Length: 165
Image (cartoon, rainbow, N blue to C red; front, side, top):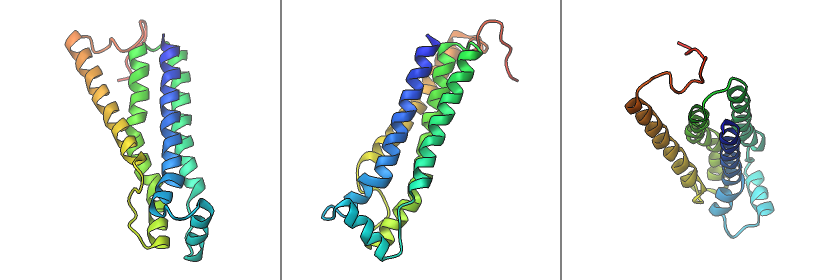
């Protein structure tokens, strides 16, 4: 079961990273200038000395996916309980909101300066990412509450494991 949960977590984080990348590099810039093709948009930015930070944004997404895969490998190798695996992957989704903000800020500034518009989201994908992160926070709170009601602070660990602290 823990493998299924780990793979589901990787899938969720990878989907978040894909939407983060598309929102930042395609959907939002195109929303700022819907009358331009993507190539025309990039040319308009270049005429004003601006460019979209492709490596920065893709790197942010890949960092999340890499952490998710590493967490999955560790959790399966150490025999963590499925709920603990889920909590770890949910934690990464929670961190997706600040990662999206950090990744999208330079692109938003480039669009704002290059197209003489505001630098915020111009497409609804950003709201979806924030909603996913908020939902992950709620899910983590629910897991914590459920575990505290059931008792046993060490229940999240596999049998025979020792707590880290």
